[in-house]
Length: 348
Ligand SMILES: O=P(O)(O)OC[C@H]1O[C@H](O)[C@H](O)[C@@H](O)[C@@H]1O
Image (tube, rainbow, N blue to C red; front, side):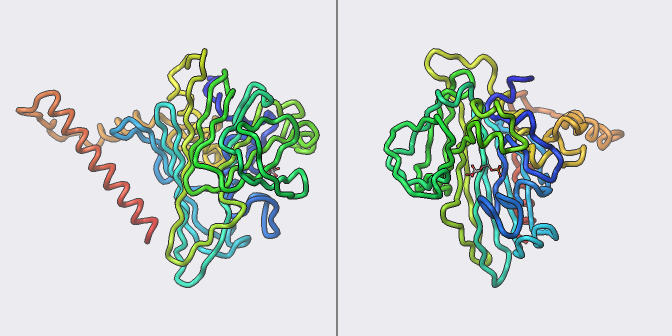
């Protein structure tokens, strides 16, 4: 199981107490990036309780999908007095993990502004050997130098010291080399104009209580965000942004294990900050302390109970292929209905 967490890292000292963000995975930064006068650093999105709208489910396409949501409540209102609705849709493909975010302003008359960022902690064998492409020519705010602004001159950025930079107007794609076992990670982003690159290095790592002194060489945060300028959301409108992480094999290496297994665990882990607070019925996105049932088994048992005593459906006249086609159509229809209902619930 150990290698199934390969692409993302979490500190040995990470605290899973629901009060503080987990030091690892992909914390959801909203509505503030950085220190905040009204609440915790990086906002409340990475510490509050989210709702699991749709437990991980295999779609007819073979993808696995899970949907979370967050809306304003007493806690969020105490820091940020706006109504909002967020849907966070995660899709797992064979070698990809997709993150789709929608932020909706249901108010009739109030505009609000916010930052949004996915704080991805990549696990790497040695950060000094990683290269990050796609930053050449971009201006960046250097937080290690009192926010001075510079322009990146390197084609591939490497990290050899404390690094905390907000690159602005970055392209839609970055490649990060030498992540686990020499693989490459492709990060694609939409509606995220900034890319933050962070490694605390030795001294800053020592200052973090939930970060081991020796852990900095094995991580790098490459964070897609909308942070150097805020998103301004007018009443009744929505903002959407996405990220896709895709692994590929670097020359001379082979993917030893079906990577869907990596990502399926990662999916749970990515959402760890949300999922570990979910009730036991959360359908597999829970952290290890929760006792999730196997959803397929549960569904089968439920159907058996429902159909008990009813005459068995006959497939008269249908070939095996036709039956498969019919079942796929039914699944698709059901999926469509669920999606429409979810969309409707979010809008209303
Ligand atoms: O310690 P945290 O609140 O999780 O923040 C960790 C880091 O997040 C971002 O990368 C910021 O640019 C850094 O300034 C910050 O130190």
